[in-house]
Length: 473
Image (cartoon, rainbow, N blue to C red; front, top):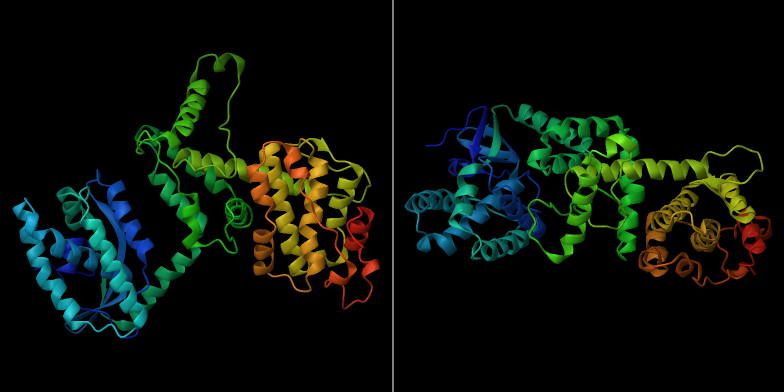
């Protein structure tokens, strides 16, 4: 009989053999979806060569003879579904007798749990049904081998905590969740990509972590949420309202050591190894040259070391661009961004955006952020070529949204971009002129909702700039 002590490391097989496990009525519904199931099986595939793989933790409250799940319900139920699907679809065909014995033992405990547990929530019922069908599809595949079954049952592990006092159990649960809330999306990406390092790069991990930790956490959070995530999503024509833990997959790409020699990965593999080979040649000790990886914002992410290099690259680039736009004194000299002295009109636009009285309103800050994102994306694609003309065009494009809307929220700018998607145009452009040829409509005074309450549209500084550029009538 499997024992569950105050703190145990149990295999999935040992976890599912525990007696009298229950889901108490205060637990939330079962909300894991097909995406979570797919991730679970993908993780097993990815870490198949490891002697053990931790799936997370489960917290029990020892309620008399019962073990109430306080934390880990989603994971535990999904594991039960996976094992039940294996029993139903694979048991009779297994060649390994030890696996047949183990699954027959698990059938007793899993069936007992499912029979005793009542799932009153319709959400739970729907997700359990859909996820079970998905696990059946996955375990029935020919590439889900008996080695995979053994890995799931005996090498996948959970850390189990058993607490006797209910208040202590909830306090522990809250502390775990509090730590989880502190774990920002970029911290989750850090943990993922550290695991993706090549084995021969293990000595680089310490330096990589040190570089990462030296970057301010709030700046990293802003980098991913405000710039990298939004630009990548909008460039694909997708919504990009919020960046949270459920969106981190956008920055999980390809592991070049593990992915097959597929055509799509070849250009990444060639560039990856060429850069490393160039930098390791003895000539570099003579000429002191160093080649950086040629990142671009909407490229496929290379897992591991290149992800951290990418984050550091864009943290420097975005910070420099935004600082060049925002950190200006009151002198009327030309603005310089990325070494390019802007035209008089472009300089006037940047100074206006840093000085007009309403710039600190929430809606105005949202619109400024999409302008900044567009400038960053343009510079990433074309450098400073024709930057002044691009800034003029992007200003009209972005702040038309501000003038035409009385209230601007996150949903407002997201919908506006999806309907007038400059990011897609930049992504698909081959020359700066492709962006500069964007036809933007003139804003009519009748459409000016931003200043309707003030009753003095002609006095608005944004409108005056639009008028000066012949985009307002």
